[in-house]
Image (tube, rainbow over all chains, first blue to last red; front, side, top):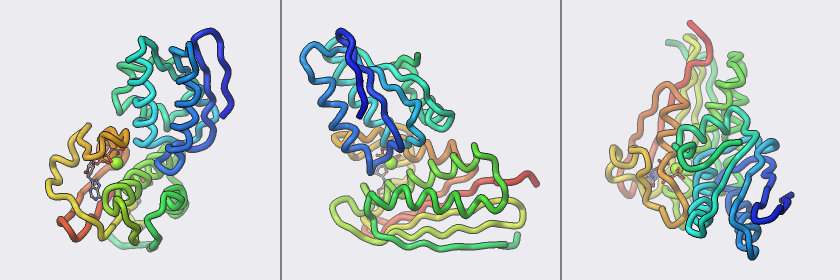
Length: 99
Length: 143
Ligand SMILES: Nc1ncnc2c1ncn2[C@@H]1O[C@H](COP(=O)(O)OP(=O)(O)OP(=O)(O)O)[C@@H](O)[C@H]1O
Ligand SMILES: [Mg+2]
């Protein structure tokens, strides 16, 4: 997965579909990025993510909980309308910033 | 109401089939010229029902999932997703937002809420040890 680190923040670009089938790989890749020493914040660039269902909610909230426990945060940007509807419905807007 | 077209799909409960199943149902619905937003809603709801059959219905085994879908002459799509897996003992509780039996697998209990929000009508029939059928309806065309 394409990603970029700046100080204590990693920006990762998820491409394609985030469902139960792809969740395990995406989860593992994101966990590798956020467990690097010094990383506190994760930004998910979803410009090229074409689909997400509730399995994606689990992946995003799971990373959020890990980083929150270390005093960090998760933010998302560039959601397509389908992804945004699932995101809003799940109540994630309350804890995950959109930028 | 008359059925103007109908299809059935049967496939193994493998995660690789999630994308196939949701795309197949939305491709079937295209015939009535729904908007792209409506097609996205159908894809999302079907994905939820199929994923539930795989991760809950059959949990640690593999079984068959059946989807039937019909287009009605009043502009409605009907979709049902069935498994013959472990079933649900308390359906009302299962359908509550945030209720999940798999929190350790990072499930958030939002699948049924997504189905109910994205479709016009959702009903669940289930019997412990026998399996589960989720029936959903969505308007594709104004009357
Ligand atoms: N086909 C099924 N067979 C057996 N149990 C099911 C089935 N579908 C749903 N359930 C039960 O209903 C609960 C709620 O389902 P729902 O899809 O709302 O949430 P989830 O799958 O647990 O989490 P999420 O969909 O957010 O990943 C599940 O945790 C499970 O216990
Ligand atoms: Mg679910």
